[in-house]
Length: 112
Image 1: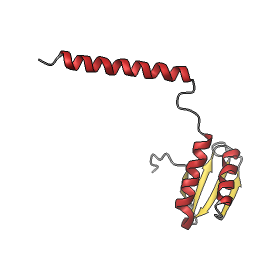
Image 2 (image 1 turned 90 degrees about the horizontal axis):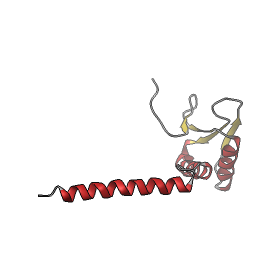
Image 3 (image 1 turned 180 degrees about the vertical axis):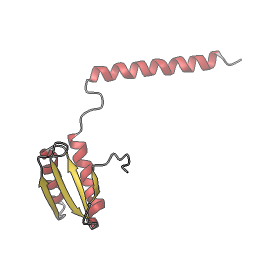
Image 4 (image 1 turned 120 degrees about the horizontal axis):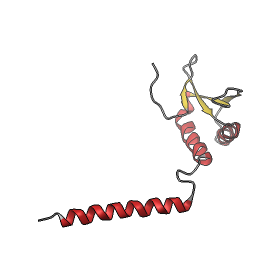
């Protein structure tokens, strides 16, 4: 049975003292490896032809918490903006402000 999980790391399936971080692009994996090297964390890596993930990095469990922080930095570096076009973002904010203003006006108009 699988569960819904938004993280890109799991416990190693055969060696429970390691955790696997997986990345969709080789560039993300290399960036994560560089961060691990800078922080002197030992790791093992694998570049794969897998269609889902291109790069796998294994880290020992005693380095897990620090590795998770470095993983978050990696994800943040390569993430795309939620709203890619700045003008669409401003339109979204204006529509939201208009709806909130209507709700506030409706609340005060209905006070008896």
